[in-house]
Length: 147
Image (cartoon, rainbow, N blue to C red; front, side, top):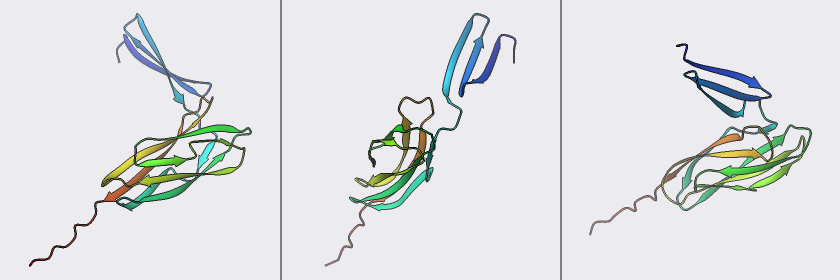
């Protein structure tokens, strides 16, 4: 490392703050997501739907628990059109497990991976992420008969 370039990282109030010094005249401050664990616990960090028949759907339940002392407003967002989540938001009561339904919808063949993110409204905590995966096989080719 040279004297003109340095990166300093500090943890302050559960945030990771990075100061990048480039030359002697420029300081860039980046505040990243919280480094402290949040108050949300989930029953699984990954949901694998396995093979889903084409033009069908499969549902799995995810248990979500609020380990905080007060109610929390959670939003559930899923990336990718192959998945839906219900409900899309809820108030999580302290110490209570709540059920979220996650559905894989098999519209066309392929491997579908996505992330279900659980955001806490008005919170500095990073979203909780649950990885989703499903494999949709094409319809089998019907056997042909020779005449």
